[in-house]
Image 1 (cartoon, one colour):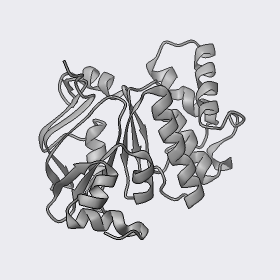
Image 2: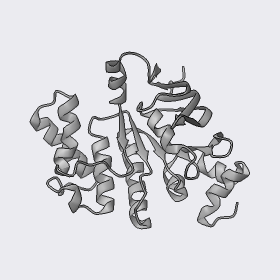
Image 3: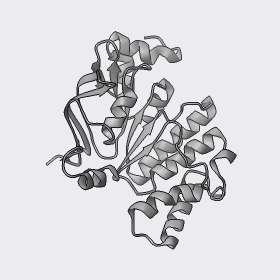
Length: 251
């Protein structure tokens, strides 16, 4: 029997400001996959992200996490499902008044019964995992852009989530640091077995990190292609090929 997907979207419509942004979305993400949601700015990628992590209710359709409706049940049941999903927000969303170690330990204090020693040990482990082993005492204002992204990634892993959702992870980074972050995401996915959903419009990042990608079209307001980045770049619909050709390769 085939292993069921960790995340499954069925007939989903998402809205923002009372207006439907995307409709008829349907895809499944198996465990361990790095899955990219791509499209031009304004197509609804971040709106879809908010729905995938349980922050917004769908206008229609369903999202299933590990076979259970993400938005069904009591608030306590929904909250428990959301805690199985780690989120790295575009701006990092680190608490400026806290050190990196304190930032990582905050969700542990709120949602686990781990001892202070266990929380401190996990924070040290995660910071070392993203290359910030010497930065536990630093505050966000003392970090470079790339360091902030890595710290935010470490905090998203604080509760050992089964899925990691990244909102424009390379946004604001220079090409070198963006490539380093891509390599780190790919390594973490391989080493930890974490399912990764990456929302981005960065073609290079999608090509280097994603196993598959879904393309959200802003004109038709629905998904128009789903496959490996290479297949989409070579054989996808014309708007999809143009999107992937922005790095200079012919469509």
